[in-house]
Length: 337
Ligand SMILES: *Cc1c(COP(=O)(O)O)cnc(C)c1O
Image (cartoon, rainbow, N blue to C red; front, side, top):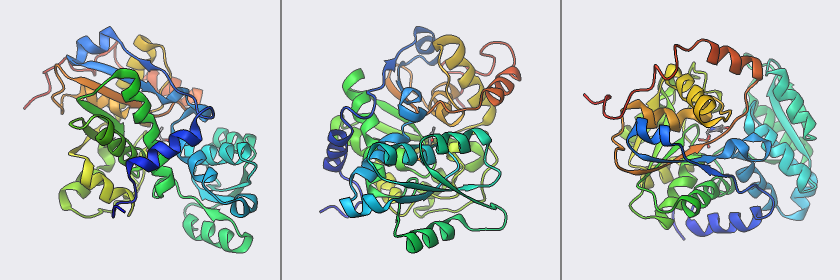
């Protein structure tokens, strides 16, 4: 047994569980994106995944792995975002019960979506109460199993299945760019790519306002930060996980960042040129490909578009604020120095 929380056979097992349940999402290409970046880019469209983000993969895998008694008793988690909806949907599909601890001031659309998938929402005050403590108390009181959003081997294994598919669909890659919050997606992607196309550099992309992942890699330990202020709400994590960090340390050569302005430009590019809706966190990889921090010219680059869940009014407001088309996208090679 490996000392790490994730190995490739666990990802292969997750693929079998997800077969026929999760969508095999399409991989798009764009001649304009290739010209702008100087690379050959392959966009894995997890914005088209069930419930609108890759998180369905990990959540379904984790709930499917529960033994019948635990599955019947139900699951509890804390999340205001995509993991909440993913757990609610996975539980509905698997005949389990989901209790989701969400902040009282969470967007109404997210509360409604979670309830719409059959989840029971327990509200808390995010300024005065500790959601992890509430989750643990509910787990103890009601015999529920706690499934956290990223720091769990079954979650990590499920998230790794997106990269497996991408590599099958696009062929071998030189670079794979994955959005980074708590590291479930990045750790899964890195183990998948390491097995399927050794030599592929799997690079995490996190918001510039919250670069705890990059600092953790440099420091060789998990760095904790305050909740970062960024439009990338799926990556507002304060630290990597005790399971995800060692896997990232072992398999990820670099973590780069993207600013909110770069994310908006990347979202606009996806809408205008590729005709797809991508949420801010989902655009992190696109922003990195255009950002100039990485030299990807001449390379085959996979990009995980991790999700597309954004309130329409917020989406419109973000895109309405940008300068003329592509002004924030730098042409290939312009970002050095
Ligand atoms: C959760 C999430 C991420 C970050 O995933 P982690 O596994 O926490 O690193 C990225 N993009 C979207 C759309 C997400 O919902």
